[in-house]
Length: 384
Image (cartoon, rainbow, N blue to C red; front, side, top):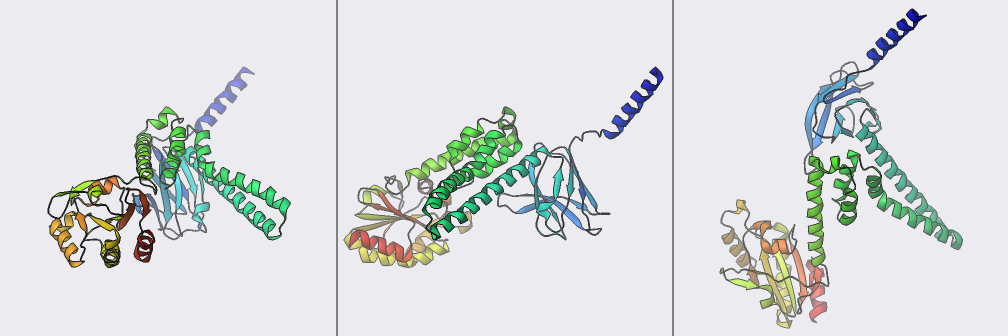
């Protein structure tokens, strides 16, 4: 009996040793590509800051299989594309053994196993899609109730719809809060803080609840800096909303003498950000000239802030002065000749031109970024 037990123990030990695979030091991606011909390339890629694909590795399909190997410092969002298949497959790769079964009909439906981070990512996407479908369904039912003038169901579905709206708005935030140890939470915070109207304070709060491992990772440190930058940008933007006081500034005029906004403002003043190299600005200038000539005697002042100074211009000041003369811009002009690093542009959060701020005689912002007929109508409304 003892001999039999010993044999069974040895067999079990050998069996368990055979089934246990050594954990790779990096990542190993074993891919299956059914019905995809030999020699087809499979590309593993990342993206640059502009979202454009950058290949980092290539594998060849042989007998409907392919393989990638490598090592990452941290999990990364990467993409797999197959030359004969439309689209690409987003997935989170980490240092583990990962299997991928490519769906040649719809690569997004490919099955990925072996990456916990990717499992969390799929869970996030599926939950978000479900929340959006629920919102769409309730919207249809609410519209039907309104069409039928069904008061009872209008009230019922209105409440349901508003609850669904809140769930959609808070879905990403709640997911991060409920997954403090998942690397996916970092990707979500990163993506959400790219949104224009993000509640950055809420995401900063939930980010601070993440595990110390995530927060102190290189990616976590990058997000910490990003949150601070977004908060600063939002605070700057809030200072420049309609109804707020326009910040004063002083910059060199065309003769190099300092000129301040508050020294020249009229009943209405247009702060016009432009540049000699800016095609849309130059095309808008005739309209601004028309508005100035029409309303200057009624109290309109304009101060042009040139963002010339790009290295490609050569003599930036000469280009600026020539454009002023060619376009017959007879109002006040200033420039530090520092391109978008101009202190006035930074003060007014200018990231693209042409851009305008319109202020009243008290220096209060009353309109922004009007062009063409809209600019003329607004000045006429203020001064006629």
